[in-house]
Each structure stands twice: as C-alpha cells, then as structure tokens.
Image (cartoon, helix red, strand yellow):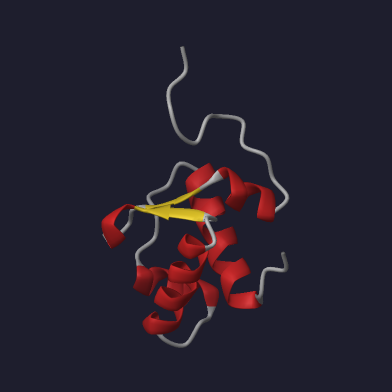
Length: 88
C-alpha cells in the first residue's frame, strides 16, 4: 500500500518519537511537525491510520498512538520487540 504524504509523515513522526523513547506528540504538535495546515487534517490521517491497522489509538485519547507491526512494515521497518502481548 502506498502511504500518501500526510499519512506517511504522521506515521514516520510517530515512529521517530516512539523509537527515541520520547512521549508521543499531541495532535497540535504533529500538525506543526508534519507541516499539515490544520489539526483536523492530522486527526483525519490518524483516523485512517487507525482504520487501516497501522496504529493503535486507545479510546481516541490524546498521546495514546502506537505503531502496530503493520505500521512498522508499512514504513519498511521491523520491530525488535513485541508490539502486543508479553515476553515469557
């Protein structure tokens, strides 16, 4: 699947922040970082990413976005840790 600019930028931003161990950015912070003009545009891209299974978004609460394995694969990256579940 092709990642269109807004979706790809939002997904890449989440990956960068998550992999660096930084807090997940808020929607306004994502708007500024991606160059999207409105927070509603960011929100729309996040909804599509969630619908497509590329991110998890816990109860649509702020700063609860997490890339799924499918999100990592869409970026061409593999996770080195389990995204869900536990390690025994």
